[in-house]
Length: 72
Image (cartoon, rainbow, N blue to C red):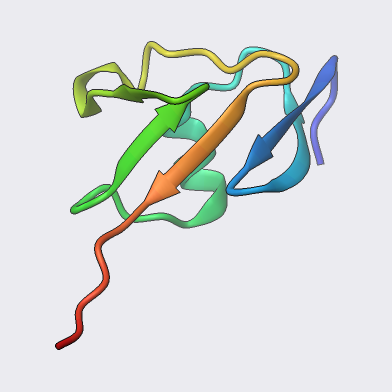
């Protein structure tokens, strides 16, 4: 897994332990989420894609990963 300090975040309603200081970009990679047509909010604030690499996650953060759904 990983070494060092871990923190607990909540991703789309599910708690998960991740390394302290993990970026949004690294989280999406771990989860296998494609960046195209994906929006990410941290603690209800939408983060622009340009900020995914620099935004670090902390203990207790609530992350929502939203992708549009097709249908008719």
